[in-house]
Image 1 (cartoon, rainbow, N blue to C red):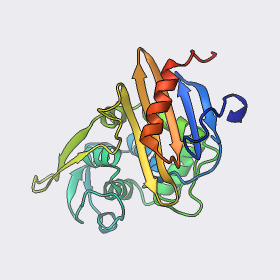
Image 2: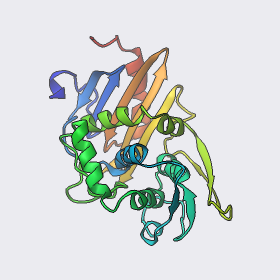
Image 3: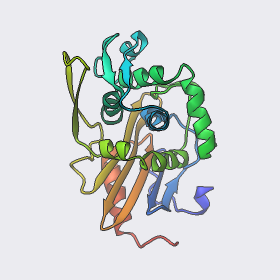
Length: 249
């Protein structure tokens, strides 16, 4: 679908990628290929939380959440947090324990909510089996679908505000434990105009990135799945996209 409307100008950028400027497709390579999305999955988890949960609610960390593997901030079972703070840990630090705590708090059928929302967004090549992005057989998405998801979640000020922050601090409700973490997005604070959106990495998915930047009133969105050098390639794609002729309307 997208190959007919955009050149695959940078086939070495990633196994699948796309670049949009001000909502119009510039370049794409295999944008509809179903691939593991890694923690880019958390964009959907974030969207579900934003649409269904009050961020001022108290979340009690479940034992399962405290044992969640991979990227984490070290939550302990029974600890109480504001949902807003766990949300920040999930968005900035890609913390799986925070992600799982939010999913467990919101619904025992969280995966069903994710897939229902995917359907309403028209993400026809996306299927979720895990809220945090762990590799699961049958969990997949595409660069095209993830671009649409990113555009939707960035409509929310809470997500957009957090995604562009370099660091953040949170604490348990009783104040006994405090956490300081930095954004996993290496473009934040390093690439002029970088605004987010989400990083991801697993053994099956490779290094993945959805990135948004703004310069001179123009916005460029990049999605890369299984990128051999996501930061270097993202900078190159941003630079070229901002210099490119304005896309046809």
